[in-house]
Image (tube, rainbow, N blue to C red; front, side):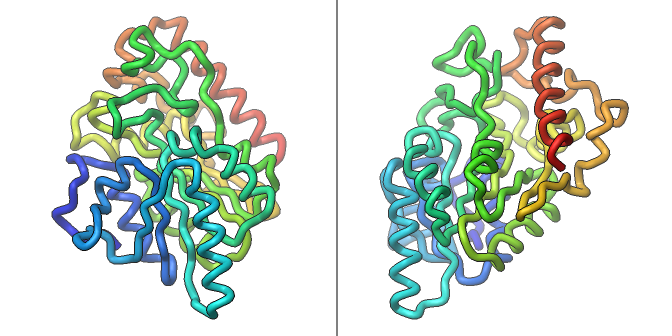
Amino acid sequence: MILPGNASCQGCPISMAMRCLDVIENPVLVIPASCSTVIAGLHPKSAMKAPVIHVPFPSTLAVACGLSEAYKKLGVEANVVAWIGDGAADIGFAGLSASATRRDDIITVVVDNEAYMNTGTQASLSTFWKAKTTTSPAGKTEERRNLSFIMLAHKADYVATASVGYIRDLRKKLRKAGEMEGFRFVHIHAPCPPGWRFPSEKTVEVARKAVMSGAWILWEYDGKLRLSKAGEKYALKENRIPLAEYLKQGRFSHLSESDIREIERKIDEDWEFLLRFS
């Protein structure tokens, strides 16, 4: 779904995720300003094998909804995909929430690299607590927002978390979303080498450590909430790797032992919430 020789950085998780779009039949992408815009490129020299519409941040979901409805009126078979980053989910959250509430017939994919990477690594609402960014040089003081939990509260038709470290699981969830109707939401964890400050060849390793440490939980909801097979064993704390192994990133180099224990406590709360309802 994406051509070689595109403008992504070495080890870019977004381009890895874009390659999985081939499991969705007739995708049409709506992309706000982001790293994904740079990767896709501008007409007439796009790196994508699917139609792409570039839009402003707040209008992404409105454009996707309108496009989906227009295709239905015209009898065109297409899966409209609002492909956004965590920053676009911040700026365009009102539109995202409204679209989920209306249950628009679109797929929304959030590639979450936990900051505004395209404009210099500024903190977003998805940025991890205590993570260093250019706007939180001493470490972010606010809690991170769990966007997939919010979409679950909206009673979306399909909600799933995924990771570029587990491509089979990611492809399975994108395929399922493409075969359904209604508002579908896929939240992809996307570790960013330059933004998180780790070597570019370590993207998949870091992504897997996020799941193996319990920091990123793989699950899905389609009327029933369940843990994904790729990560369900990490519900048991004794099966997880030490959280400090995942946190070996430049943005966390300043953490103390008490900071790590506090992050672990927050992660345990997320697990307790999911296990209560799964």
